[in-house]
Amino acid sequence: MSVESGSADRLFITGGTLVSGEGRMLADVLCEAGRITAILAPGHADALGVTAGQVIDATGRYVIPGGVDVHTHMEVPFGDTTSSDTFTTGTIAAAWGGTTTIVDFSCQRKGEDLRDSLETWHAKAAGHCAIDYGFHQIIGDVDETSLAAMRHLVDHEGITSFKLFMAYPDVYYSDDGQILRAMQTAGDLGAMVMMHAENGIAIDVLIAQSLARGDTAPRFHSLTRPSILEGEATHRAIALAKVAGNVPLYIVHMSASEALAEVAEARHDGFNVFAETCPQYLYLSLEEHLSQPGFEGAKWVASPPLRSHHEHHHRDLWRGLKLNELAVVSTDHCPFCLRDQKEAGLNDFSAIPNGIGGVEHRMELMYQGVVDGHISLERWVETCCTTPAKLFGLYPTKGTLSVGSDADIVIWDPVGRTRIGIDHKHHMNMDYSAYEGMDLSGRVETVISRGQIIIDNDQFLGRVGHGHYLPRTLSNYLY
Image (cartoon, rainbow, N blue to C red; front, side, top):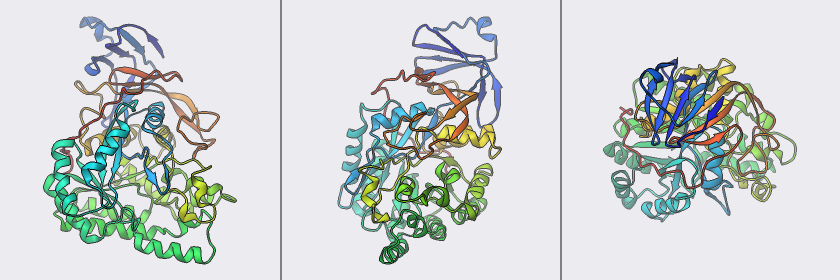
């Protein structure tokens, strides 16, 4: 691929194969003032008198929408520490991986006003992001004040999705009655409820019993969070959403076959239920990663946990993506360094900060799924770009290559290679890589955000502060 310099306000991408969820076609793309203004058949630009400033020759490349990662956690507190990527380092890493939009989480703690928590997250992100960003709102304290504040956030802040937890008692946990009330309010507003579906009360019993036996190594993090309890919580969340009037429900970071079966049944029956999975639940496992000798397994402690590769979770999740039982692939990017952060749980797996870093590698890992025959090229774009934008009120500004959409574009080299690792491709603020040594097909070549080239041929050309806050609309795709 070659880039000819010219006016930064006008960009012409020629010779590439445009890929969407509907198919692929040879076409040229004209971008002006940060938006896509024309999509032309090859060779028609001269006939129509189109002139361009900067020209990108994308011959032999795929041209896709910028990735939309709707599940990240930058600068999120966990106990006495905070996730290691700031909004600056995390959004730069995202850009390196072909993601041009993230939706992070504003976190309400017990006793805190919902609106104050959002202001805290605005202060963290404003002026510090290299790509565009939005927020979901975590409700950690469901009461009359919080329920009333949900309407304010929808009407005035562009927050149209609210996350609740069935896990983490004494931190973010909500009981079934609180969840039902929040769902009823969200339904009245037309908003989405996102759910961390694990039975936290039962899990805490298993954790206490494990520690009492002296079973403190990282692998017991998975063994005390059995997949059946993810399936049970998913079933219960769906039941509550039905009682609340078929409120739109989105199950986050799905890891277990039992949970997928619940979502698949609800979707087949016509209910407003969606789910995401993450690359870690498709590629990593209890045996190969969490069970590594000594404390090494702590690198892969996250919730839900990595599952056993003997139980067909990986196979079922790939199949769920292919069949649209799983709608979205996000990362749940929540990075912590091994030294000085994960080491807080040296003698107690329950004290290890939960999270895996992956915002940089989602598009790369999922393209490998295309090469390996798990999903189609179109499904790759659909699950990583288009559907997340549709479900969370960003479409058609984001997630599509359409006239009028933001010029968020990735030029993808299908014959290139990407090697992940600390000494290879790694821009997240972590002292290790969860995907160390993986050698993947395909390569991010050029990344464009609102018409500006921010990554090109292994150079970061972007600017901290370029990223805009995105107030989101109520989605038209939930009912």
